[in-house]
Length: 176
Image 1 (cartoon, rainbow, N blue to C red):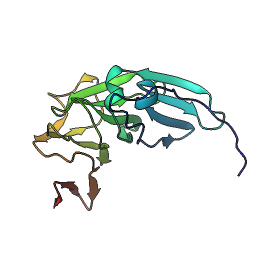
Image 2 (image 1 turned 90 degrees about the vertical axis):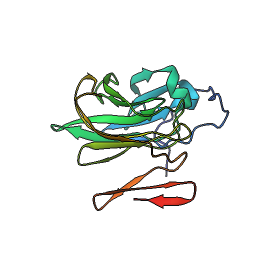
Image 3 (image 1 turned 135 degrees about the vertical axis):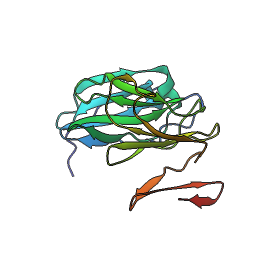
């Protein structure tokens, strides 16, 4: 249990003053840190040294508390996350936006995107709205990659995909 490295990802706070609730994810040697509350950014760190490899800044990330997920289109991994009004896919090599898609009417996102078979599922909160979108593409993929859209919402609970079915909790009711 010896500390190998330590890196600050920011010292700000989100507008709600809730602090961060997102978890980092690991993709090969890249530690992806959603630092929305701290820095309005998603940050890619070298898992061995803690050195910053890239930083994806966006003001909207200050209203994101979900954890990113990894999707792979044609064998190319991408970091997907729910953001206010949209779903984003970042290139893990440089943090640049690969594609995006309108998702809901929410100006904040507390739940995490989930992925199964290269389909990204995002369910909004207060404003409602849900979307399933195929991973891959470039720029706005709303017309080319959306599988379905709905009015489902979860507020704070992240959905799960199990046995080919999407489950989520809303207002104390579990829906499949």
